[in-house]
Image 1 (cartoon, helix red, strand yellow):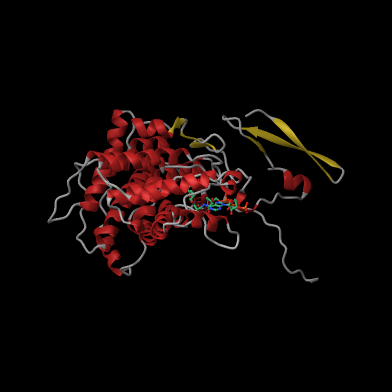
Image 2 (image 1 turned 30 degrees about the vertical axis):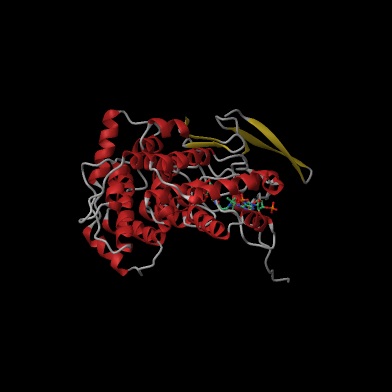
Length: 420
Ligand code: SDX
């Protein structure tokens, strides 16, 4: 990072603020000495223009639609790896060799069982409880059953805790689904790889053995890889913030799950399908495009727009193609795909969306694939969370390793004073 300066002229003084340059050429002004030198702070609500940290995990170029995990483009990872290899890459900074891959796979299998006492927790949730609320609660509860990793020294325990969270979350998700449909839970098996194990836990039944289709395993690996990390998004910022107080890893991840459940964030994949259902019933795409543009309406095109991408989300491009191919190979037809395509086509021609650089994001087409896989709508964001776990944990590890101080931003007070 080369050292140059930005000069701030204020109150007759000239303050030099160092510039830092990232490995991809991003430039930031280091304001670490600003308050000491000037008594001033900067203000940037929602951190629209603020880099919160240095990171080596994921790089996004929002203008060019580039996404790389540890320097490897996501489309390459989708083509050449399975989800657990990409998870290992995010957690350890490089793809696993055969021995490392086998060890990680064994760790995931050995930590895939839920503590039997936790199974009864499901009985206490209301039947209609949203699975994301259940998952945030259950992951937080894991810390009462398992020793927490020592956040002050990232020993081997972190790998076990990371494997336990990733693997137990998968079991919890399948158990939550089975309970929601009143079927007996299906336990993880030691002889199935990560994604096949999940599909078996979701869809196997004592009276109808699940027929594992390679296309289903392949598409699930791909979707989980595409959702695995996305640098400083809202839920990852929640994880880094909560983790900075040295909260245990389980509770920290639970905070990420809660943030991801929001409809402006990961909850959008379920909101997209709700929206496409409404449009399909109404049959009038233009009406909804106009509603999305109407400032008096709170309606937004869910799955459209992004804080960072000002062009097509590279993940959406891959998922859109996979959606078409998967429905084709499964010999399925979903009118919702045609509605999504028509909506995208109309929006991308419209000045309102063009001017604001609003394109489909990762959530726009993913729900159509989950539907085709037989995954219910209220589980779509749980799938997003399952995928994002290695990303969240990688950021937590990076934050702890950097001896990050507790996150505690400043504010500008505009409230009442003793004088007014
Ligand atoms: C994810 O950050 C990440 O990386 C997240 C994520 C990840 O992998 O972690 O990529 C996953 O969360 C994807 C985003 C999923 N959310 C949605 O699809 C919800 C719909 N999209 C929007 O609500 C919105 O686009 C956001 C929340 C995604 C981004 O919002 P910003 O950056 O705060 O932008 P904004 O709300 O200030 O919008 C700028 C303008 C506004 O119009 P003007 O005030 O300039 O007239 O664009 C308009 C907005 O009204 N706008 C939309 C719109 N999104 C933005 N108008 C209609 N429909 C939309 N979807």
